[in-house]
Image (cartoon, rainbow, N blue to C red; front, side):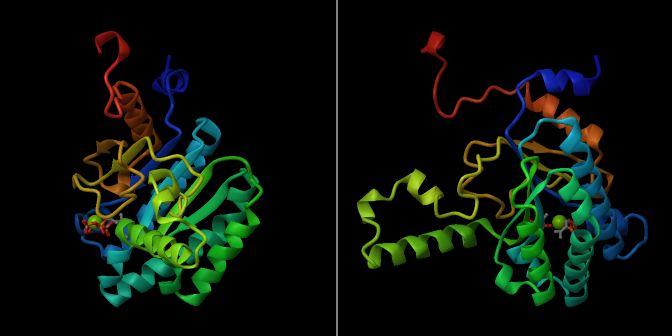
Length: 247
Ligand code: IPE
Ligand code: IPE
Ligand code: MG
């Protein structure tokens, strides 16, 4: 039995979220500009999306493409990344739509160039009725910013008299996040050897299993993704409780 077959028979996560890190180092190691690493990183993301849809029954995949803090990078790199995302959406949309992928985007799109924002909205609208892989791209996304925005909207609702402050619990709060309605990530993968969450899905990852891979993102293959799932299947998730038999 191949590892993929074994993984498919086991308990699959509902939602895997990936911090795609290490593009710059991949390029630097080859004497190339960082932008070449981002191009190779986009190809790696594409490879994974093509693999996951048809080969695994994974309902939700979230990819961290650009953080709120990444706006502080040199202007040339930021512009390159925005253009790359634009190209990615334009050139792959038909194929992804065909594959039944439902595209979602989380993040502060007000900071994104107009053209990309339009393309994002069109791609989301065009795939809204698809029932295959829910693919979320986190773009101009920060977990703290998302939580602050939710708190702001809750405060507005309360001030307007539509929400009682004492009705706000964790479930109600989650309903104000951009990820409302989606399951929390069961597994968060970060590539490149860095072991931190860098403001990604802070609320939603409360009980996620974390998997840190040494591989730089452009080198991350579907085979390594399957190995990460196999390793995830060996973990015991407790959610703060103890097993009945040992309690
Ligand atoms: C991840 O790779 C891509 C983005 C954050 C946009 P990096 O660009 O962070 O690559 P490193 O971490 O510098 O190698
Ligand atoms: C996290 O990577 C953001 C994305 C992968 C899009 P960074 O490279 O920006 O994170 P830090 O700065 O190393 O924490
Ligand atoms: Mg990085």
